[in-house]
Every structure is written in C-alpha cells, then in structure tokens.
Amino acid sequence: MVNRPFTGPGAASPAMFEQASTAAQALLAGDTADAVACYRAAIAAQPADLDARYGLASALAAAGDGVVASAALEEARMLHGLLLAKGAGADLVRIQADGDYAAAVATQLYAAHHVAAASVIFGRAVMAGHQSQAGLLTYALSLQHQGRAEEAIRVFRATAELHPSPAVDQFGLVPHFMVENGRARYAAAARAWAQRWAPEIGDPVFANPPSAGRRLRIGYVAPAFAALQVRQFITPILEAHDPAEVAVFLYPATDAAEKGWPGHIVVRPIGGMNDAAAAALIRDDAIDVLVDCWGHSAGSRLGVFARRAAPVQVAWINFVQTTGLTRMDYVLHADSMAAPGTEALFTERVWPMGAITIPYKPDPARPPVAPTPALATGRITFGSFNHPCKLSDATVRAWSRILAGRPDARLVLKYRYFVDPVLQAATRARFAAERIAPERIEFQGHTTGPDYLAAFDQIDLALDPSPYPGGTSTCDALTVGVPVLTLAGPDFFSRIGIQCLEGAGLPELVAETWDDYVAKALALTDEHVALDKLRQRVRPGFDGGPYGDAAGFTRGLEAVFRTMAARWEQGRGGARDAA
Image 1 (cartoon, rainbow, N blue to C red):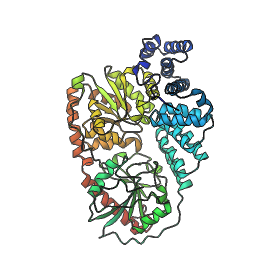
Image 2 (cartoon, one colour):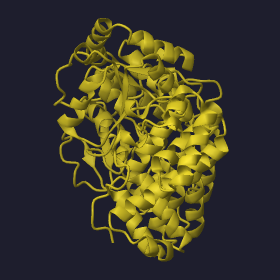
Image 3 (cartoon, rainbow, N blue to C red):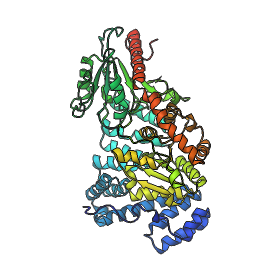
Image 4 (spheres, rainbow, N blue to C red):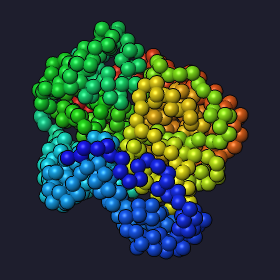
C-alpha cells in the first residue's frame, strides 16, 4: 500500500513560497492583480508547481475573490495530497478506481497525522464507491481537524444517514463550534440528537433519604479519569473531596487505569453495560448528584443520563455547551462566561461557579520559569499550541496584523497535525493572503512530557484563538510562566479564556475587541525587559490564584451539589425549578 514515509513534495519547509519570483514579491507588496497574473502564468507553464498554486490561492484571497480563492486552494491541496501519496509509494491509478484501496491509503495518512493529505485521498475513496462507517467518519474528522467545519458537517451527516447510530450521529456535533452562528446551530443539533437517540424513558422514583446531616453521594461519568484530557482537571477535585462529607463514585468504561485514587473513592466500570443497565447500577448506588464529565465526545454515556440515573444530573468539565438533554439539570460555568442569550442555548440551567469552572493540576515535572526568550534572541516569538481547527479566519487576520506590526517576529504553531505538509502549506497560504511571508510561520509537531513543557521556553507571548479559545493549552502555558493573550468574545464559549487570565491575576491580558487584542500584543512585546517582568508574574499568579486552590474550590463544589440536592428534595423531581 504505502511503503515509504510521507515526505513528498513540499514537506515541512518554508521554501514552498520562498522563491524570489515576481508573483511572490507582488503578493507581499500588496499588488494582488500582478500576483494573480504571474501565478496563473506560472501554473500554465508548469501545472504541477505547488508554490504557484498555493500562491494563487493567497493572491486571490488577498484580492477579495473568496470563492475562487477557495477553489484554487482546494486544487493546490488536491495536487499536493496526491503527490505526497505517490511519493510514499501509493498507486494513484488504483486510488482513482479502487475505493477500498484509497480508503486504506488515506487511513495510513491519517494515522501519521497527515490529515489534510488524508482528506484528499478519502475524497477519492468516496468517489470510487467506498462507504464504510469507519472510513467516512475518519474522512469527516480529517476535514474537521483542518478547520474545514462545514465540509466535515456534511460528511458526518451523510455518514449518519448511511450508518445510523447515536455514536455516529454524535460525531457531527463538535464541528458546529467552528462555524458561523455556531453556538445556536450546535444547540439545535444537540437537541435534535437528544430527541432522536436519548428520549426520556420511564419516570424513575428515587428513595434517597434527606441529604442534610449525611454524606452526599456523588457520581462522575467519563470514559476514563486517570487518562485523557480530563485528568489534570478532575485529579485535584478527587484528591480534595472530603470523605466525611461526600461519598465519591467513578463510572469509567474500565477500571484498568483507575488505580491511584484515594481509598474512599469507589470505581464502578460501566463500559460493558448498555445504558439501561448502567443507569440501574447508578440508581442502586443511590447517587444523589451524577456528573457527566465528557459531553458529546466519542465514548460519552449521555444515554445513561437520559434514563435519569440520579435525582440531580450535571454537565461539567469537558463540555461547556448544552447536552440537549431535558433530563440534564445543570451545567457549570465560570462567572466570566456569562453573556446575553446564554440561557436560551441550554436545556440545562447554567449554574455560576465563581471565578473558575475547575481547578488545574500542573505537571509535577514542569521546569523552572525561563527568561523571556527575546532577551537572548533579540526578536519576539509568538506561539499557539492549539488545535489547527481553532485557527478561524478572524484569528489569522488578527495574528497577521500583529506580525505586520512586529516585522522581525515569528509565529510558532505546534500541534500533532502540523506535521502534515499539506496543512502547513495551506496554513502558510492563509497568512500569505494577509501579506505575511511564509518563512515567518514555523510548525512543530507532537511532543509529550518534559519535551512538551520545554517547548514553551521558546515563546515570548502565547496567542489564544477565537471564537474557539484554548483550554488545556492555555493552562499549560500559564503553569510554565508564559503569558497568554485572550479575547473576551461575545458568547459564553468564546469567553473561556477570561477565567484563566483573571484567575492568574492577569486581567491586562484580556482584550475586549480584535483591535484591542492587536494593540495589546504589540504593546506587551514592545519592551523585552518589561515582558520578562510580566513573565515572572505568570506562574505565581496562576499557582496562587483559584486554579491552585483545589481544596477551596472543592469545598465550594460540594456546597453547590448539596444545594442542588436540597432543591430536588424540595421539589421531588423539579431540581431546576424548586426554590
């Protein structure tokens, strides 16, 4: 199938645009008409010239011809992906005719994190008749990971029609975070999912005794707690729970990795149970408050909540959006996430939690805070370690304005999918359309542990995308002392970053508008010594603020859960509406 590494034409090098050509010079100088003409001439002379094809897409976008620019970018990606597969040993003739073979090649590309190249070959697989559930889902994910959300939604929808199931249908919800009017569209899609796959079943009767004066019984549901992205958030809570006040139950898929929790915590794996059996088990445990920590992500058990497994049910941690379930009573938000119209987007009642939504446990192996690197390099390095899907057009425009204001600065984009040469080239093309030279954008792939934490030492100022901001990556940056600039967006989801910065005592790193964001970035990086002084405040502020006070937050959380249980007792079934 594929017998050589995926290092085809244009692999991970700024040279894709770095030619001293008339077209490139015209583009960066703002002469878009001349750039378009020169790039078209270059393509006519050499149709396989990837530099010219990506350059044409940039020039057309810079000229304001968005529809034609999108088509040109797709042609560049298509050719690039095919050449990449060919260079790795794939049979392009067979890819065109054999859908299963094409899907297998695309799956190999996807497994190597070459998501943009994979989407090209998956497209050929579908055209050749491939319709497997796994192949179509991976195709849609390969689009989603590039930020091509509308295309991903269409493929997810087609997959759900061909292979209907709650899990397949659920995949199509997340890309709504990335589209225009995404919050409202997501809320409607979540409600529709719940109506199709999680209708209210039965009306269980609970015999839980009054909660006053006894240990409250709290259950948490997620595929895993000691692994995956909830670990650094849930760990300080589980370690801080007061066993004299609460009895804690974990309901993961398996208990294989759940070995290091405090001895008072009960682990009940439910991965081998259907929703009805899992709900029955949780009712037998007489849980007072059941907390979903996973939401509409792969491996969720929202069907358990649809069966009303506990008197009070709460959505938290991994999902701040609505679940769409009418039997989910509450969702927990930080106060700073409040925005007009928020309540209408939820089937749950939004419960304000104060300064933060959840504490965070830094990696115990984090290195000492390094000086801001500009002191040694003499130039500013901006950085984002966020998923590529979060790089909205508005984000690219704002970051380009910042780079234009700092002509000697560079931008480091680090994530596992940025090893893909096609994604690199397409991303550079987006910045080139804003007159940012491609060599100023540097890509880095996936690292873990000390290598991941050490990568932050090269960043002077981290830039948070919007309207899909960072979460874990923002906390990681702050815990190693890197300041992060965030935007206070217009809705609850785009305001997630505010709690991180205000919680670290750094409100000056919250911008109110994109203009303010650009101005702050330039002001913060204007004087390197001052930036280093800011850097020295970041980790102490984060550690000494509410994110570092797991015990205090957990006492408050336990009090919130008691209030919720008391409201249910007063209303006996009307948890949200009881006084």
